[in-house]
Structures are given as structure tokens and as C-alpha cells.
Length: 334
Image (cartoon, rainbow, N blue to C red; front, side, top):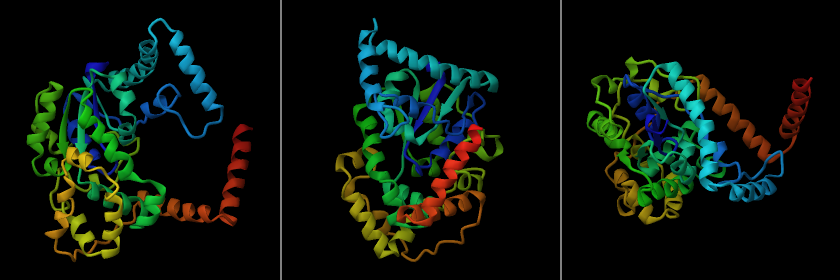
């Protein structure tokens, strides 16, 4: 399966769904919607571990490493076993779709790259980066209704993903093509040609018009913004900078986050620390956010964030959820 797999590596809110749909519009490529197949496999204990599990995961990790050492091929045998599992899952779906290549885009894979590149060293890799502050702004607005503190308490996104992706860009453990989200939006054909050349397939004009093609909608991803247009649009590239330039409190909050990021990592991403705030210097500083439509996805996020805050405080809501979980488990077992 190795030469038939394409992995799109990038952080959440980096424009990966847009790029995924353009690449997936190629007649030879099929792309499932974020299957998250590899993240749990990477955390079985040999490479990564989990913080909590319904079994003794610490003992399991030690035992697993000891057992792998006794195999004739050691780590290589372990990787063969993992690859046998994922190959079946990828190949069966690929055969069902009748495509030549499968494009896998799950942002969390950026956090287990050391495992992924060992598992599939001969796959085709596309690394996508976007201005880190744009990533953060999109994350907060999309999932936390503009609540910067709640978003950071829930997920220190930039502190996790900037060094993880920078590791790939710095170490270059496998061949890849690096593209930046802003450039993909401005010159989609140019960068799609680069990607196609890297994979070894011919560029097709229809890839840019991704909205004219059918895409897998069964998984996670951006179910709202990417569906508003049929092709990349440049009008929203700098919108985040205009909005942030007019908000001193949020701008100060972002500065505290970005001060924690390594200068070398940011440079590898394509956004040197010295230039990180230049988009806001040239922004109008008065962009008003348009009215956000109430979609099923947004309603889900509002409910989740409301409940999360109440659970964090404890009290009645937390006790009700615990009771609901208990009785649901009882009913499902029966």
C-alpha cells in the first residue's frame, strides 16, 4: 500500500480540509474524512502511551516493549504487524472506491509523526502550514465562539503542533512537499501541480474546482466553511488579522502564546518570529465579524462548550452527566 498512500500533514484549522478536497478531486485519488486510524495505533504503548485507559497501560507498555525485543526482527516485526492492520483498512476502502491512491488527512497525525514515518516511509507526504496566529484565531472562533481563555485551557494548540510539524520540516525523515495555506489559496494550480509531481500523477484542471466533485462526508473535518465555495477564495486570507488588530485584549493574549514558540520552528513553518505580527500592522483594524449562521455543527459546539464549562465548575450538571453515563452503560449492556 505504501506507494498508493498520500498523507497530508498539518495542524487543525490550517486549511487542510480545503487542500484535501482539491487533491481528492483528482480522478485517481480518494480521500476519506479524517478516519483517525493511526493515532490510537501509535499509542498502544510501544511508541506512545495514553494517560488513562481501562487497563494497566503502563504495565502493558513495558511488557509490549519486552516482547518486541524477543521477536526475530524486533521493531521491524512490530511495524510489519501494525502495517498489516492498516494496509487492510486502507486497501479495502481503496478497492471499494475504485481509486489508485488514498489521501489520508487527520490533523492529529502531526503529533505522532515519529511513528507514521516509520510505518510508511515510502508513502507520499504533503506538509501544510498556515500563519500560526491565523490557525489559532480560526480554532477559537470555530470551536469556542471567540473565548480565547477557554480554548487555551482546553487545547494548547500552537504549543503542541508548531514544534511537531517543525520536527518534520527540520529532520526530513521522509521526502515531502511543503506548501503554505495562504499561497495555496492565492495560486492553487501552481501548488497542486507541485503536489501532483511529488506523488507522480498528472495535474487535472478540475482539481481547483473542488466543489464540483463528490467528497466523503462521513468523518470529521470542517463541515461548514469549505462548503461555502466551489474553489479557493482569497478574501478571507487576511480577515483574521483585521479582526485581531482591532482587539487589544486578544492581541495581548496571542502575544503571550507566541512568545512560547521556538523561533527556529516558526521559521521552518515559513513565518519568522520577527514578521509574525506584520499582517496586523497592515490591517484596517476595524473589520467586523459577519453574523455566523446557526448550523448543526455550530449548535453542537455551543452545547459542548456550555456543558464543558459547567462540568469544570462541578455541581449539578457534572452529577447529572455522571448519572447519565452510568445508566446509559447499564442499558446498553442489557
